[in-house]
Image 1 (cartoon, rainbow, N blue to C red):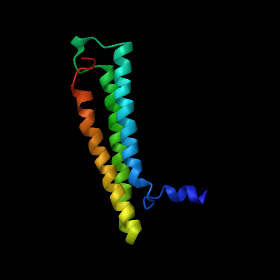
Image 2 (image 1 turned 45 degrees about the vertical axis):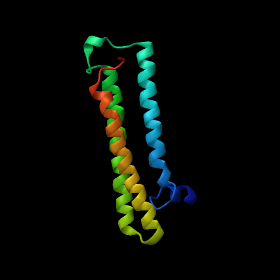
Image 3 (image 1 turned 60 degrees about the horizontal axis):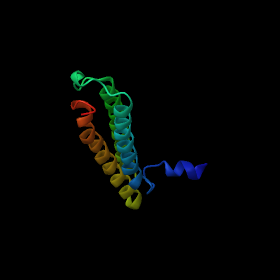
Image 4 (image 1 turned 120 degrees about the vertical axis):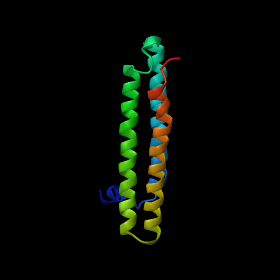
Length: 118
């Protein structure tokens, strides 16, 4: 159990890849969901960008971006408390989580602002 808890600390090197892996899962999930929803029950084109589909995918994107921001903040706090290699891992993982948050915002903007299923 202690080994499992140690992996969740921001000083563990696994956090160097977790942020980008989670971002890729978000990207594949959101755009796959958009494609499936457009194939099964597309919203009317005259609805524009204000559809339930866009709201749902925008909500998932917002929650994901906030989650990445919280993880980045946690990594920054852990970096302040450590030295050496642990500080490096926490700092780099915090920046990667922040980069992933900006990636969610950047890739999620078309979902919110463009009518789906065009």
